[in-house]
Amino acid sequence: MTKGHIDRRTVLGGMAALATGGPGALAASPPLPTAPVAISIIDVGGALALIQPAIEEYRAANPKLVSRIALVKAPAPELASKIKAQQDAGKADLDLVLTGSDGLAAGLDQNLWLKVLPDHAERFPNIEANYEPAALNLHRAQGAGFGVVVNYYPSGPLLEYAPERVKKVPTTAEELLAFAKANPGKFMYARPANSGPGRTFMMGLPYILGDKDPQDPINGWDKTWAYLQEIAPFIDYYPAGTSATMKEFGEGTRDIIISTTGWDINPRALGIVPKSAMIGTLKGFHWVSDAFFMCVPKGVPNDRLAVVLDLMAYLLTPKAQAYSYDEGYLYPGPAVKNVPVSLAPARSQQVIAEFGRPEYADLIAKNPIELPLKPDKMVLAFRKWDELVGPKRRQ
Image (tube, rainbow, N blue to C red; front, side, top):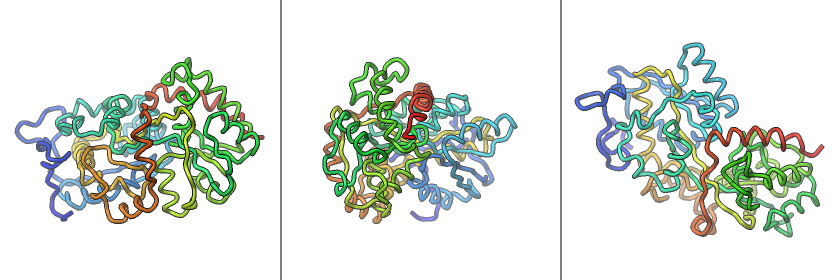
């Protein structure tokens, strides 16, 4: 991209011009500032791995709007308390939050987010028509106007295993339980509240086990909670993030871990996990989709809010979305239509060609893609897992 000003008339692939505060701008959205402002973005889920290049392009191309963009990373469990403390103190130190469904849910639970849609819909013309269908479902059901989907993938849950150590690969939930019992400590997944694969496994089991209501963790997951408690004594511990499971799997400490498409491809591309690692699914498998969301904390001043909304819209253009292929971190990654891998940087294309799996296309086409739990239900599921399952790990 040239260093000139980004033509926002191309936002979301040829949509109408974004409102800039001039004639016809709606009162709900503030006008773009007349002097550049500094923006602060916090990432609690890893989205910067996918969209940081696009953010930096936006900054370089818009010197009249933004003077600096500070990028901060933090663990997801710290997000809600951090923002609430700022809001209680009357501060607005963070302008944009990049989060998975866990951080989105925690913020909704404490009423921390600004209602972006439909309140600022004029900044995102035709947004729903431009989303991939599964990403649109997440945008509506999970984001609910407070979180705007920026990246999407079908996720999992997948079993990732070392073929040289696992001679009989589990193909059912019962076989996975039998493996864990026969090989204590060799199966692992991370705490769901901190891990995409962990929560995907938790939310995918109700479909695999045939539970009463996969969308109701309190009254509809009897089989799931019983299963997770039964397998828990054969799991050494639940890491506070997925990276630890990948590291220990790569080192040979664990033989089977829970994974997703992105967590399968990216650690192998980075050399953390051997290229030879394989993936499998359990009988009754349904995909449980996942996404990264953009959320705006309440209290952001109007001049910064206007730029944040403008940046958010730019991040949903096909050119910006093409960076989402990254090194397979959230495969495939783009949330909007018409973003083939051929638009991605050469390195991304090389990684997908070498470390992607041909079987993913078939798995995605032939298995249902379910929505994750709604944010309020997800918070309840995390709490119940922490109460019922976490303490029962191997002693």
